[in-house]
Image (cartoon, rainbow, N blue to C red; front, side, top):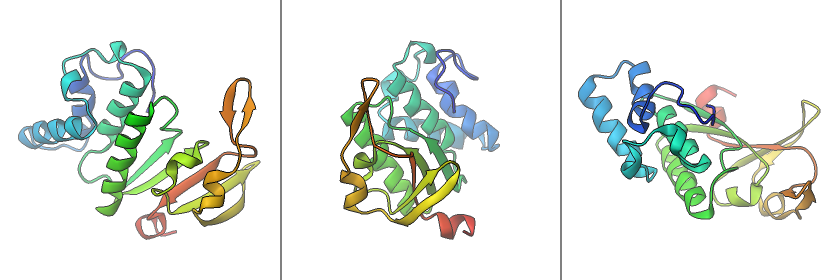
Length: 173
């Protein structure tokens, strides 16, 4: 899912979200209902008629997540999905993903802001040079390690980490 300023498929947010349903060949009535449900869950209802290019980075990210959450999707892979979100939007997205996880969705996430995942992630895998160097339950020491500043942005020392839940049951690993 890209965050480019131009829409990937639709001229309006409605079309961007509905595209996920079209790809799954849902009947029109179901597509309409699911699009409205996802927009409401992600705080996008007021933006359904907006042009995607006019949205903020965080709003575009929430639209992309909504489009990816079509019925029948079993796993969602996210690359730093919290990067452009303010605390309120971050909480909204994590709460939605946690609710979907409880309903069986596997969520795999590459993220540097691990402290935000405390209470949501169940497993943490740390990679270095493409190899797993740590793998285990997501615990407070991972979430509270000190941040260092790199080029003005707060970053966690060391390699990025993958946090995921329900992955072994959903994807056979």
